[in-house]
Image (cartoon, rainbow, N blue to C red; front, side, top):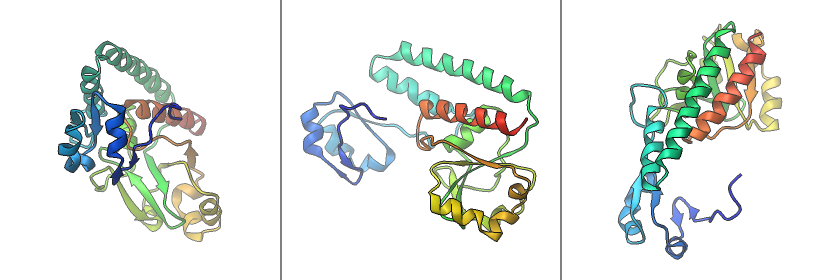
Length: 226
């Protein structure tokens, strides 16, 4: 949940410039989607464009770099370094817990409807966190710039010894439709009862979202891989 005094600046396509100016910000953070508005925003306050969707050599490297860059702009570098160290402790603990389990490749998805799903790979938060934890992704095919690809469920039929993890929300009507779908029920990992769900984690997020996702995923796999 956002803090109660968080201002609603409008839709990404329809920002309320008058409200932004009235708030008198010291710094405005934007994504590449808003780069075209930088000249206008810079008249209010300096704007900073941060994007995690760049090629990196190690998992979560871009999100760590962005955390440090953002911290440097808001006089919070010591806090950022403390947080990054705490994440390192979480990683060590999580990988030690996972090392005790009988592991298999993990297929990360979110459902679009009862016939289509997003599968995650590349530089998506989900896939990067998976690699950060030392786990293998079951999806090795290309994905889009934001780290996911929408596929028909039939395209998952060739994936056998994998663990499917769906990220909520999954609407009740999709849950019902999947349970009665011959296609879904014939998928190898469904027949083997190797599929489950975890609570939501923001797929476009930074390190806090990666932390939340890792905790949810490790706890889920510990229950599944007994």
